[in-house]
Image (cartoon, rainbow over all chains, first blue to last red; front, side, top):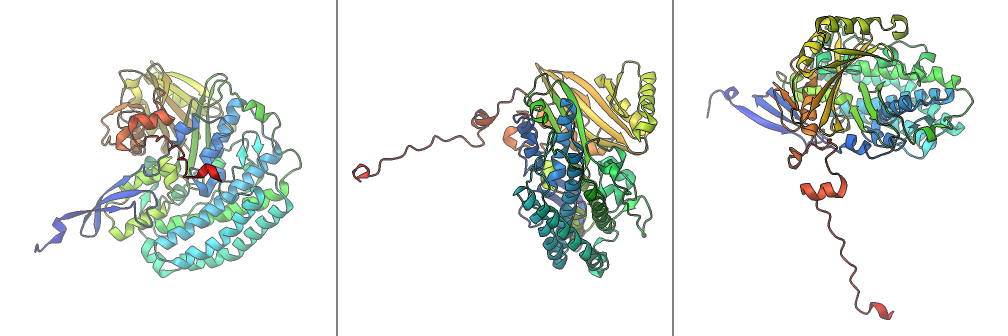
Length: 379
Length: 180
């Protein structure tokens, strides 16, 4: 028996069969219970979405895009739709602009609610898993009323949206938002003041803004450092109506490290603020939805064949900057090249730098705090 | 906002680059965005300049494009929030000389983008620390699925042996089937 076990390294595969590792695996090299090397592995979920897009016409493509991340389906398909609109020169009616924006924020809320539960459950706090997910059901019920589908709603299409707001849908949406607003203080109390949660997350997975930007982190992972980097404000899309609402980019300044650094706890705080902002935007935009058509009647014809061009669609997704770069040739029925940038591609990569030096039990905390979704990096 | 600043910041950066490296061409894009067309030897210099010019330089994307007949392009997209500058760099490569210097030591976030471009297009990045397959299974190593020459669908399944399409078994006539 060797007296000092810390000389020996052992290798552990975290995933792909682990309960928390749904579709990914990381190879961890340990000394004692400290991780010295982390090698995240991708590809378990790869469906070659970029190649698939090259064989689908411009109205079908959005359906592939939303399957990359079912939780933020409205947001995931949008970069593709806006890129097609830019090349084809399609204009979006005012009513569709507002409806799109509202539904995207609803999508953001239910995606974040899902993440609250998932992250808390990874730390063993199962009450926080179940309570927000009950509230999330109310949003899914609203989606069901809107389109008949609870997840892959396929709402955005070049030129506008596919389904109109009905009174019953608006009633269900109102119910869901009211319920969420009622319960928000309870959720915050339950998790942010929980001693267990604090012990597990404070000073875990800490990085500075400079490191985060170099790795390509964006969205709440960077806003959690106190940097208001948000494409909804920085590069507003002309076909979205964020300019009609009065809102500020939410940021979290850590009381423990000050601005410029974030740990897992800050990112949880940040994701509560994101939901509050989204609720605020929805509340302001709902009364402003004008009467009129919800889709440009000429859009269908224009999207059949596109002229030659290149366009870059960008949006602030729930998890960060998601973009799509589209190239077409003259009279194209399908894209020549479509490149998807999933925000989690970068956050999953950053584990390579973030994890070494931390304890094995903290690995899942660091991973979970970045809100990763395998569909975004494997595509 | 881009409307207030006009194209100042992006065009200023483009001018700085061209003053230093005259063999680079620039093209203004919509909004506060610029495209720089770069010979491949210059890519590290330009990326270093972008990193030095903007303190919050953010590597947004990097990928390859197959233009057919052995012509490839690499596109790098960078973004700076404080200056609201979007910068797109374009490098042309012609087969069989598909080699370019890595920039993953300047922006480590592009390490996996380069790895993906390598497995999907067969473009080599000199000095890259880790060039294993990222997304593809081992059977597709060296086959470069995002190239236009890659056969897809049934033919693809047949050629790489992932799962061979099986002929459907013919329905067997059951005994006494015709006498009902």
